[in-house]
Length: 150
View 1 (cartoon, rainbow, N blue to C red):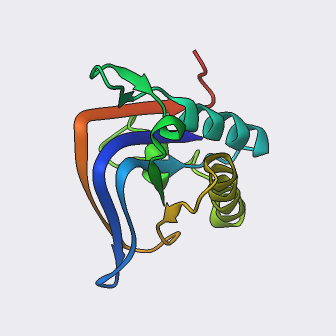
View 2 (view 1 turned 180 degrees about the vertical axis):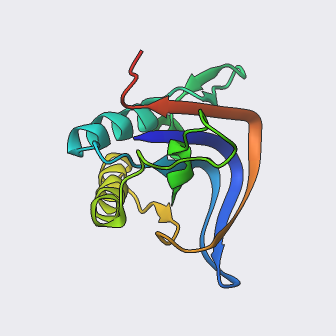
């Protein structure tokens, strides 16, 4: 799994001109699922995200986690995170999982994140044409790949 995590002051997802998710003060998570991903990736990644110290403490130092700040989250499926651009100008998405694999993992990731956060997590609509708006706070943008845990 690959994610791009953006610390946001606000974020929302709109599908067919209807806003379906909205948060303030938290993270927008763009989630790319690879065909080799498992529940182990979900557990490791969700734990990493909720404990990642990317929020300012009272001294203005990034020392607090999403859990410390009681922040919110929106998860948006993003198969293009697995784009390979080695050859030519058209990206290849061969590593991205097909819907029969990725939809159950996407749903499991959201449920796991909700369990760790103790609250509802916003989400996009898998496979839909989504309009994602955000106000990146910082800006703080972090990339994590469960296949590269260095």
